[in-house]
Every structure is written in structure tokens, then in C-alpha cells.
Length: 117
Image (cartoon, rainbow, N blue to C red; front, side, top):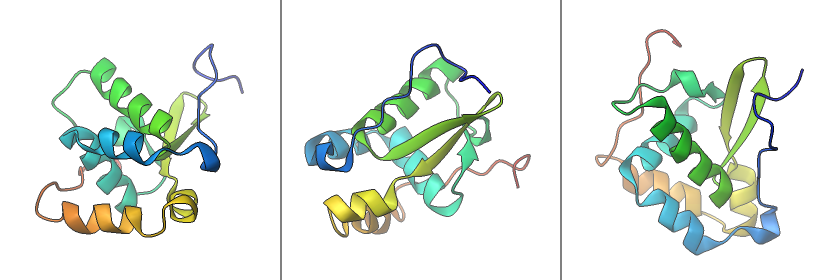
């Protein structure tokens, strides 16, 4: 099935992951919450995130995370599925994602969407 978009999704190679782009992406609370949510609910579609922002703003947050190398996205039908790139991040920056998740406790909570549960 064709992609939802006319342009391909950009995912940096492991060797091209940049620590400063990753950390910059994680400074935003919404993006940090997306990462925390994906750590407990891998493979969640974009529609599975409840948020008080418009769909276009949420789409931008996903793009920033994808282009920084934190998440991988792929389309299944009309749904865009999101997963953390944990193995790849651990390969390039061992323990970084675990530290981010540990430090996020008490700062942000994963999104809960009763429709996806």
C-alpha cells in the first residue's frame, strides 16, 4: 500500500545519530512525553496520543523526533505507526535512552488513550 505522504519518511542511519539533536528534541515536554509513552506502548499509531494540541502541531513533534533519530515511523494503511529506536540508540549511545526514561519519572506521564487500550 502506498505511503500516506508523497515524500519518504527520513530516518537517520545509526552512524548519523547526533547526540545534540537528540537532546534538543527531548527538551520539549510534549516530545519527551511521546518518547515515554512509546517506551510503555511500542507500535502506537499517531492517533493513539491524546494531546491538547492540534494534529498539525503533534505531527511536527513526531517529525522532530523522527529526524533526530529517536523514533521510527512506518505506514500501515491510513495509520502511521511509531516505535522507539532503542536498540539503535543503545548501539550509538549506550544507556542514553534508559537514562532519559529514568530521569523523566515524575516529570511527565505516558499518554493514556482508553480507545487504544
